[in-house]
Length: 326
Ligand code: SF4
Ligand SMILES: [Zn+2]
Image (cartoon, rainbow, N blue to C red; front, top):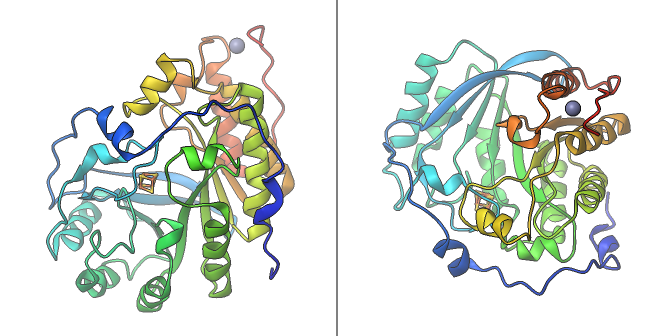
């Protein structure tokens, strides 16, 4: 675990258009934000998930209303449910308290704040103690953060809470030309350093990997998701979530209209999930949110969705779905 492996991908070069993506271009293409209440989470849910211990348990997620993330990633649509200014001290605990009265009982909680939990402008440090009290009955707590904001504050918060803290960090892709175009202002060395830092302090990492980011063909999208999975596990990541790219944030819609991007197919998602699971190096999940948009076959869609759901939960590769659409 001591030698960096982040240099391994520099020799791979695809024919990517010299296309400039930056904050102002991305911001210009955005639509309106949704109206949000700083004292209420904008969403919450409870879903079954395979936990680190291998049991299938209810996992609650609270989507906190929070200040917009200062990074402006090309594929991100989380800004839609954010505030322009920091929420006041006490607002985040109030949101958690409110959501916990609505959610069914569970032992596992995700607090997703549409940005970076350890950004001082996002979650005020003054709220940590109250948050720690609110989550004391859980066994695990997942929070999310950009790799460049992972530091001692994560350890301090982790020490302060009773549940095991797990960190969610977006790797997105290890493609050496696409990652800079995502405007995430990180490279894979940043990612690797953050994961190793957390690993050293016994904080497990889950990461998000994009399936078919812009500028790649379907086949390249699958290949690079697979390379990204390999890299993530080599750095010490414990859990991987594969996220098919989609339009809806302005910039991605523009890229799709201008044929720089296409959503991946549900069968590519199955292929990448199969690859990740058979490695047997950690949990690998396919993100099934709005999964219908990745299939145009009414014959096999339900079977494929069921297969993905079962593979997510059981972490075994299931027999493929055969259909004339392929
Ligand atoms: S760092 Fe995360 S929340 Fe922030 S813009 Fe990028 S993907 Fe969105
Ligand atoms: Zn089909």
